[in-house]
Length: 493
Ligand SMILES: [Zn+2]
Image (cartoon, rainbow, N blue to C red; front, top):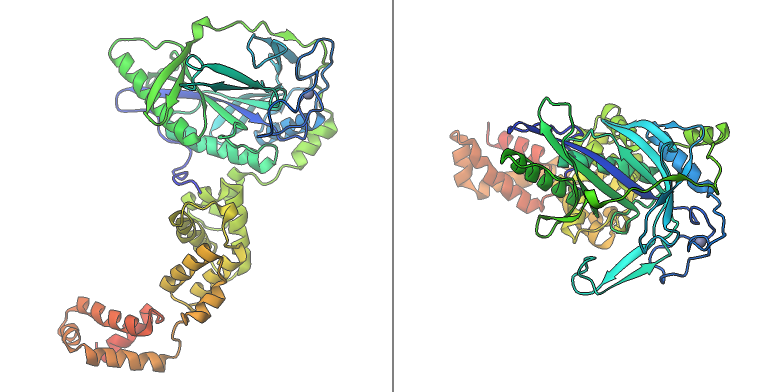
């Protein structure tokens, strides 16, 4: 579970030095269809290079592209989830550019009439979302790993032609933290749709940020720079913050921002210029003559709307408003589908336990224990929702103490232990027989006359030593409130 996705979407952007940041995102989502966008080659990640190719995705002359129906359906699902308007007839264009990752010397994309436009996800408006195909993957080998400094570049065409949806936001974001939080929400939303793996490290979700600043109160946009393809939202947050700071210093010193593409190096915290935008290209978009306009049928639109699952933003509100879970925990749980499913599984175990208590265990003790034992992923955790549920129930009804619950949880995370069995084997059940507890309390008072006398003469704090003695004798199996009550009774307080 990522930490810190908690402070709510609208982080203030205006700063004390009189500038505000204006940030828009471009997100490329690789769709997890069986086959490529315009041919029947399989999609794969991590296979031997150049085995999933054919004359279409290698750009041989004389071949014809055929759109992937599933990719279009996935695109429509994304459009519906982002509350976009779908164009009755969107047009595929050829985006011309010359680069080794692009065998046709053009990419099939959409230009002036995209699949979807004018949407919104929480506080950020969606400008457009369109379908296109991915380029081949370039692997730069050699000393520095950067394009200019490498000895050779290899091309893997397995990726060429992978269906993509490119989502472009309006410049509605105002800080690096907001970029991270909103990006995590978008990722969770797309993951929930089941249309992409959204794995940033493997490149199935890639995010570019356009960053500019302007004086607070101004409605004009400043010159923007583009930050490319960070492989986590946490790095993107840091990169965006570094770029905002750099632009502020530049403008405050009377300089001007140059439009360029930047790379942020998370290890040094430095920004490097990749290429100046002035050199870049007119893509000479032209309508793709081999494809008819894309006109989704009413049935396709209906199917997309009807198959929308409960999305993370709605789930977060439900957790907060109906289950009474605090905002931070509600977001942590609902922005990651796996955690949400796990939480609901734990909740289902015992309807007598308050959802707020279950949420605390899941996002608090349990998530912390996973991290403490070597940052385990939830998907690989040995603890089932049902066994965590039964542990929480035992604590909730007072069968074991909270402290014992935490130590049982440790064995559950380490070995997948059954909590009921651990409680039995280690004799952790709280002493419910008040006669037995009363005996232990009396002998603790007799064995510690000093503290007992202090408490009697008004020093309330001295009772801690007596509580400690009882807990030691009972090995933590006594209810703290009950111990306190019995101590006070026998100290005549
Ligand atoms: Zn192919």
